[in-house]
Image (cartoon, rainbow, N blue to C red):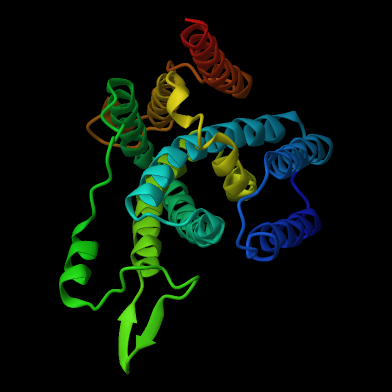
Length: 325
């Protein structure tokens, strides 16, 4: 396996920055509800770019990192789709006008990227210094998988966090949105608009999303470059996906089960890797357990494709059967 050239990584960061800026701050700054055609075009473009990028990785660095990227990207993309459920609830709870939802998503996705970048740096530092952290990551993912499978993450209504409740008590807030403004002055008195609380809610929710996604991606690749790029590609086009799937999200009934399989699988994989490189003194006297099997990269990709693809297909079949009745 060849090492990814520094020039290629720098070029990738520049291209992704351009993609991100155009996607969120050029197209995303126009307050409008995107058409189905516009949404499909954006999503197809970014999916194609992700596939092309994986092909370039394969050509430059070999098949293993390319498969790791595809596995990570599919996992993060699937988690992002699941996160859209929460975005829909937040938008509904705060009665965000349709024409402003694109702008709100742009800011929310930007916050998500920054937070994930910070978590990736922290995660990379922990993984490099402390192999035993995989035990924690693995256990957390298995716990999350069980919660998702049981439907404990399916919030039918949104509950404001403590910060929002406190701000509501001690702040002057307008009843209506004032475009994209966070702060307005009326009759000489300054007021916050509901947009502030939408941003705070999206931001704090993104933190929770990062707790799921970052351990999951580190279970598939240890390369910070692949971790970051798979996250960025998963976030690109997410606002268009929100509008395209907004009416269909509640019909993807088996998606949580598919995600629980993926998270559980990665959790087990992380624990196996932690055992294989064990340094904890109370496990096998601090020695690695070499008899533990290693999960090949291709198997990770296969499990992710079949779990998410199977869940999506089963959801579509059930949706059609319900509509035919």
